[in-house]
Amino acid sequence: MASFTSPTTFTAIPATTTKRHPNSPFFSTSHHRSKQITTHRTFKISCKASENNEKRPEPEKLTLLDGHNLDRRNLLLGLGAGGLYTTVNLPKVFAAPIKTPDVSTCKDSTTGFTNLKDHIRSNACCPPSSENPIKDYVIPTDAVLRTRPVAHRVTEEYKAKYQKAMAAMRALPDEHPHSFAAQAKIHCAYCNGGYFQDGFPTKELQIHNSWLFYPFHRWYLYFFEKILGTLIDDPTFALPYWNWDNPSGMSMPGFFEGKYLPNADPTVRVPNAAFDAFRNVDHLPPAIVNMDFRNSASGGYTCVQQIGSNLTLMYKQMVANSPNAETFFGGEFRAGDDPIDMQHSTGPIESGVHTAVHAWVGNNRMPNNEDMGNFYSAGWDPLFYTHHANVDRTWKLWKDMQGPDYPDHTEPTDPDWLNASYVFYDENQELVRVYNKDCVQIENLRYEYEPSPLPWLGSRPVGRNKNSNVAENLIGTVKKVEEVKFPVKLDQTVKVLVKRPARNRSKQDKKKAYELLYINDIKLDGEKFVKFDVFVNDLDDGTPSTPTDSEFAGSFSQLAHLHGHKMLMRSGATFGLNELLEDIQAENDEYILVTLVPKEGCEDVTVGEIKVKLATSRSSR
Image (cartoon, rainbow, N blue to C red):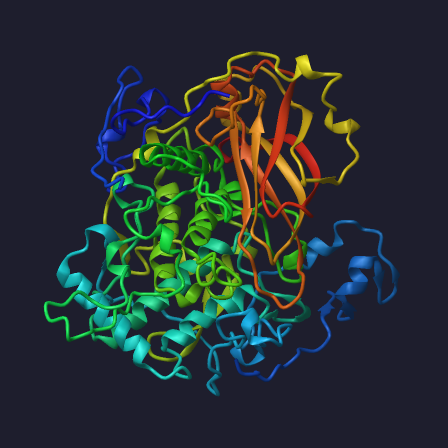
C-alpha cells in the first residue's frame, strides 16, 4: 500500500470530492466549490467509596391486554401465562423506551474490587440521594442564549470566568449535588452498572454503544453548564469546546495544562481548576491529537501527516459512514434489552474520534488509564466536558448537512428513542427527569456553538488502488464468507470475500439505498481497550495500511469499563461502501475483500458475522 507522503505545508484534499452544503454558520462558504477547483489551505498550528443502599424493583412483569401479568423472561422463551406463544414478533409489542430509576436505586459500580490500588478513583459512583420526588424538567423559555466558544481561541476574560466557575464547583462538599465529585460520578453511574432499568431489575442501564449516546451526553453537559453558570450567577456562561476537528485546535487546549495558574508573583500559587493530574504527559501541548490512537502506539506520524490522517478520519466518520440515523447514532436500545449483549452497531463518531481522544488523553501509567482512558473515571477530568462539547457539536454539524446528498440526516423518529429518559439534578438542585425528544433542538436548550471552519469536508480520500476485481482474483486463495466457520477470532488479521447485493448501481440507486458493510456480533472483554481496523480490497504489498488510504473503511474501538469483573460484551460496527467503492473503482465487482486488522486488545475478540446489505433511504420510502 502506498505510503503517506508529507507535503511541505498542510494542503487540504482537492475539493473534487466535496458535496454542497446549505448556508449555515457551521458550514463556511469556503467549502462550496465547484468540482473543477482545487483548494489549498495552510493552517496555523505548531508542529513542535462508600457503599450505597441498593433497592431492587419487583421481578420484571409485563401486563397483557387482557390484564394478565407475564414474566418477560418467560415471554422471551416463548412461555406465557396460558401456554406456548408462537408469534415470533410478540416481544416487539412490548417494546418501550428506556427509563431511569430514582437515584436511590443506584449501586456502587465497581464493587468487585477489594484492593484500592486497583482503581484510583472512588468505587462509589452514585450521586447524592434525595427525598424529593422526581419532576419532569421544564426548560426555561426566557433563558439567554449561551454561546459555547472554541477552546483554543477563548479570551483571558473567559478563562477567568471559567476558572471562577470550576473553582466554585470544586469547593462544594462532595455530598452536594452540584459538587464536582457528584458531577463526575454521573458518568460512572450511567455507564458502569450503577443503575438498573426501571422495571427490569436484572438489566443494567448503559448509555454507550447505542442510540442513547448522543442525547444522554447532551443533557449531561446541559446541566453541568447550567450549574456552573448558577454558581457564578452568570446565565451567559457556556462550556468551551475542544475543536479537535480543526488543525488549529488539535492540541489539548492550553489553559487546561499546569497545576497552577500563571502568576507574576512566583510566591503566590493559585490552583488551576481545569487541571487534572491523570493525563498522558506525552500528549500535552503542542502534541497533535491522534484520532487513530491505540494505547500501545502513537502511529509514528509527523505533525503534518497526523493532521491529514485526522481530517480523513473525520470525513469518514461524519460523511461516508454516517448516511442515516441508524449508522450515525448507533443501534436501538429499548427497555428490557441487555446492554452487554447488544449485537447492533455503535455510531462511527462514538466508536471513532470520541473513543480515540478519551484514550489519547488518559494516563497510560495509571492502572486503568485514568482519568479519561476509562469510563468509570472519565468525568473526573474537566477536559472530559470540553471534549464532549465537541462530540455534541458533531451531532449539530451532521444534522446541518441537508440537501439531496443527505436525505436522512435527521434524528430517529422511533417513539422509544424520543421518549427515552434520564434523571439529573438541575441547576436548582431539583431532581428532574428529561427526555430525548426535548433535546433534539439545541435552540430550545438555549445554546449555540461559535462557528469554526470544517476542513474535513474536503478530505475524502483520493482513490489509490484502482485494480478492478481484486476479490475475484483471490477466489480459491481467500475463503468466501459462506465458507467461513463463525465466530472467527481476531488474534490475527482476518481476510474474507463477501458478495455484494448489487453491482454497477446508478447515482439514483445509491440515493435510494446505502450499501453498508456490517461487522456483527463482536464479542469482547469490556474491561480492556479494544481496537481493530477494517479495509476493503486492501492489497498486501508490504507497505503498512493507514486511515488515509482509500481502501480504509473505518475502525471499531471500545474504551475500557472498570466493572469489577471480566465483562464480556457484544457490539457491532457498520461502514459505508458507496463512496469507498467509487474511489477504488470496484463498483462492478461481484465480491469485495474485507480485511480486519487487530490493533489493540483483540486477543480474545471474536466476530460472528460479516455481510454487505442495502439500507433503504428515507427519501425513497
